[in-house]
Length: 101
Image (cartoon, rainbow, N blue to C red; front, side, top):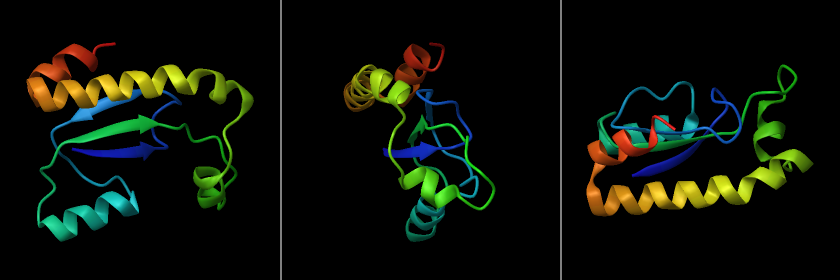
């Protein structure tokens, strides 16, 4: 299971997927290249995409906003629950439990 930030999802959105493309994410592209496949489970953690053009790196590596900091502990707890469920119950059951929320 790979846990990855995703600017294509609103902040705090969590999605578990069995595989897929890298969507321009350098980390996922590298993992796919090393593994020789795009079929590996990934938990996408939405960080939003509210950044000026050309400032993606600064946005992704920058500080959380005050509003994000308030929501972050709850979202991290849910992400931890998803990871535990993935390990104990498997991908399909975990996707059914959490992707609908």
